Image (cartoon, rainbow, N blue to C red):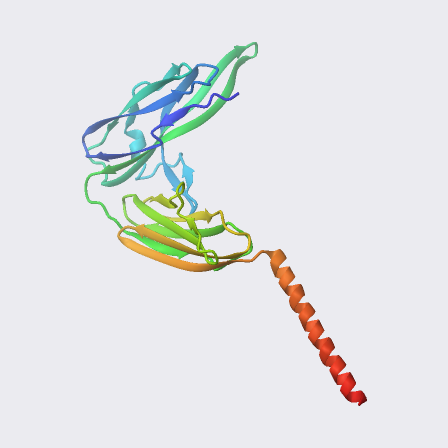
Length: 282
């Protein structure tokens, strides 16, 4: 069974000044149900994204990921017993010529529990988790983000209904977008979103010099009917709202309607044909 560990926090925001040194920490938790000691290794890597879907890139070094070279881990390896945790401290030494704006890195924790055997070393349960560092170096920051698209479809064959938004960030600092989704049944008037357990409010990070598409599925919808969905986006001082009546019409219902219409047309044609035949025989 895998030794599933936890790294906290999952992300951290840090304000930096060129030429100064900062201290931080992460916490690694070996859970109570673990059956073995956890041998960890902590490293740093650049953190970037690729594509509109923001595939994580932990390899490419850019002007915005230089912080990966500024971080020093104080205790990069160690062992944690079950039901115990370990604070791993790090320092960030910011160069005096560090560029203003965003800097991004991942502090990765690797599980590498090893056991000796006759043929050498066997590696068991090797996997990785990370704490993402979103840092801002003081200086001239450029905020240039826009809402490019706010989409709610008007027709779907089957639930869920997928709503989407597209953002751009041409600045030198990351920006946070807030998305609020509301939905209600048009026939019953019942509110679908938000609910007591789901506020349907999301925050998404938009990295500098990128574009991003965010998709969400609106669930708990009727299999057939009409719902009103409203998506409101707040981003970089801009607000966009789209409200749409969405028809949910599955293929089986469309087939029934088509067959019914065809039957009605055939009946009308038959009646007209009989009427004409009767009139012609008189």
